[in-house]
Image (cartoon, rainbow over all chains, first blue to last red; front, side):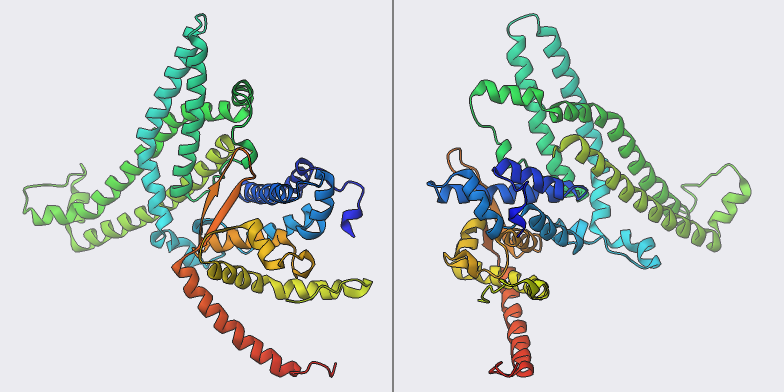
Length: 303
Length: 129
């Protein structure tokens, strides 16, 4: 049997480590789900059998719960089925050429991504201001005793914001942003909790993410607004000009182009070009959503 | 429940077959347990409920239960909430949704259909093998 192998885990931590290794390369959200489930089960097993040692429990667990490799296989199967994740991830199945081209038009995820692109400017502005203010305030007050609590409160706020931003990204971009592991829930004396918070790499990457969100957010917002405005105008412009009976006039600066646009063929061309433009923008929005989701995952989530 | 009998060496095939059988049935069983419970249950509790105190009667590893719960949750058949306590172990509680109950009814119907069909095919007494 497998549990006779020499490196069979003897502690919960070792079991979780082996499970983490066995799931290497799987989506982070999946790994964190698996670790949270395993930790929950093992700690409940411990609580139910107060008389047994951790090592005894683990020997038993390998046959009842399964070895880290067995468990990893179950979660990988889940991932391969495209289940167990948010619907957006599940929807990413191989599709026909037509489906790939026109799919984004019919998927809510596209519009959610566009919404995120628009939200990114106010969010980014807030994150950036908060981070720069917090950093300068912390550094500036460092020489005084009050600098220490200010710095700690600021760092704590960064972690809260990272958690909230994670929820926004998960909702709108469909990237699984795992909750923290049960073992990460603050425990122990205050001083230890503070130390863990400050030494956690994720605190600092989250701060970096907050700074990065200003330029990124501006770019996303501009891209979304300009695309929507430009392609809408392209489609509606000639029609509005016609209906206004000369009160509004389209002027491309080239007389022949102006005439062509007002002809029926010209109007049709504008509408088709506008639709193609929108389709193009939808694909860009999905791309931005995916890329930003990856970025957020790498900077806000720790495994 | 199916009894575990994998004591001898040539049961790799049996294990494989059992695994394939379980892949759909585990979801049915878990959903039924939650429907019968009427309230919320956490993973460990469901595992114990399924094995009725004797872990060896479970035809699949308890570790396979949790991904099934996640899957049912992602499909909207269950809702969940996490309870973290400082003293005790963390627990993710699951509750069946109305969609879950409707789906369960359909699954049970489908399962009964398949079971009748299979029983007819292999013969009711299954002793002729």
